[in-house]
Image (cartoon, rainbow, N blue to C red; front, top):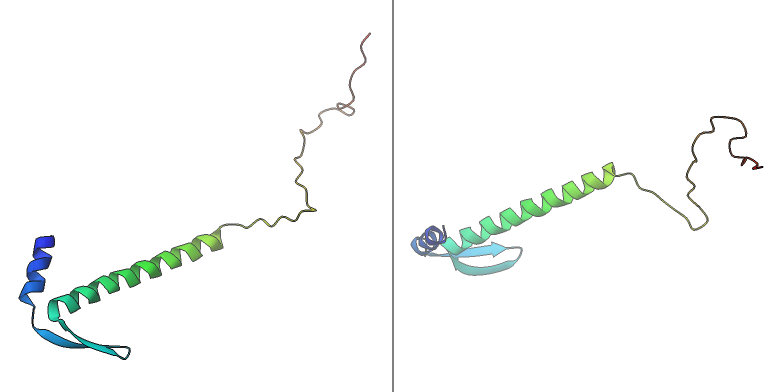
Length: 90
């Protein structure tokens, strides 16, 4: 695959002017196309990653705890009245 990429760059060696946000310069056509493809892939990947992170954060319930809040666990349900009172032994 790298060999094909190298052949592509070498066959598209004519120089071209590149203007991007006020910056300008000259690059070979193959390098300019390669850079455009790489930056396009990066842009799509970053956008998709950010979208997925936001989606997961919206779906995940957030727990807010304060220092004064204590978490208590409910005990087993009482089956008989007075079941929590220990029995007396003889």
